[in-house]
Length: 269
Image 1 (cartoon, one colour):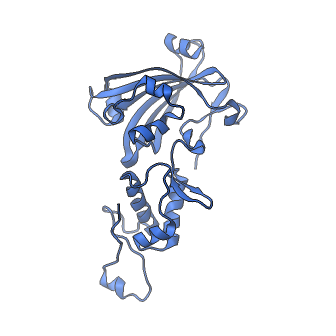
Image 2: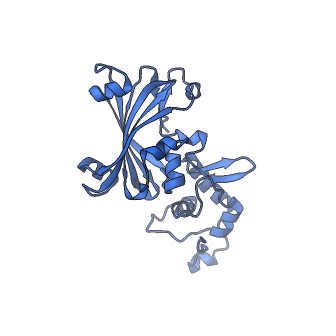
Image 3: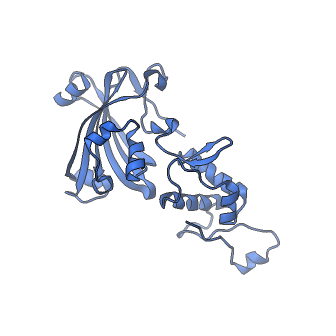
């Protein structure tokens, strides 16, 4: 996929003795939109279109600068911002790559539960128990979250995550059925990596951001049994909507977190 070179066609600007960089806006944007933000939007457009797949290298800053007819510094600033948003990953001496949830430093970036000792690696990877993966119809709540119609087909997955063999998180998640055709409980059980990495490699769906709502709740009898706790132990309820490119919602997830040995940590910038 090639991008149209960017030129400034304004005659007054062309006559100016000082060279200026300019990009044609992708859509109506404020006149004060910084140039690097426009370049960022063009790179993001290529990511959305699938020009560069997860874990693949993107062109060098020099190549991108030539492609978009801007300075290398402008491209670097755009790439830096995409890297800070975990959409790209810089590797010293190797280049810049499309981030993937298979990367160790990225795969758990939506999971904010930390052991009391503060070291996530001390427990090793979570042990996953897939309870079910079934096809059902979207409730009003699920349809609203996924921007689909009530009654549309969705996949509902239930699983328990354990740390150091202690059940800690009970998750229910809902996915629109069409993009995840062929997803089964067996397929989830056979996958060794993170669920989001499976979504990337087998269904070409990449979760790039999420929004959460958090509240304290008491578990019901079934939840107590699955988490091996009692009805008087409060749990942290974390409701998440995860989005792919273009802010398209692709997952509604409701997790119940047992926090007797963990705490929820988030970094605020």
